[in-house]
Length: 180
Picture 1 (cartoon, rainbow, N blue to C red):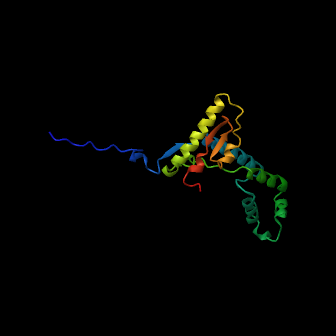
Picture 2 (cartoon, helix red, strand yellow):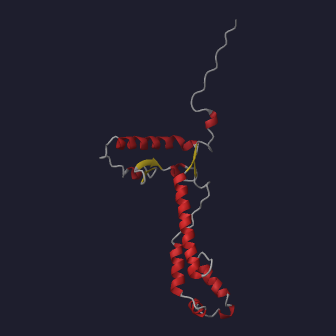
Picture 3 (cartoon, rainbow, N blue to C red):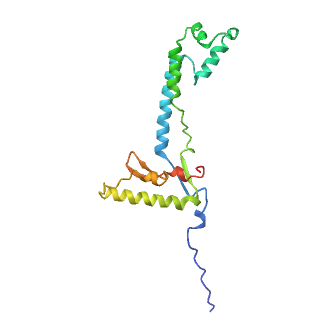
């Protein structure tokens, strides 16, 4: 009977989990829902702007360029005079575009809201996650004297205070590849 040595078991994370593209990956549902609501608000404001201006331009520059292109023979006139010629209210139209420009059109591409933390930053992310959980557990146990408001500043905004749940959470966007 021949004795064979058993191969030594590997230690650490299995190699299948070392893929830097798949270390931590999840879909940020809350931010996505917020973006969908912001897009709805943007569309409502755009409809209101279209109603006031009578056009489908998204900015004042495009509207005024179109107004000028309708009267090429009157290039010497000021834009305000073209408004008067078309019987348009300068204040209403400029006000509508000014109010509309305050709303940015958010992206609702699901890829934008998929957070991917590469493996080289996974260890640091898990450390900040542990810090968050420790402070949240302390607060849940009734230690309300602990001021968690300074923690985001102390950690360089790697930890944020979620205003909905009033809990500390790691700022996952600080750990993605694109953030320097």
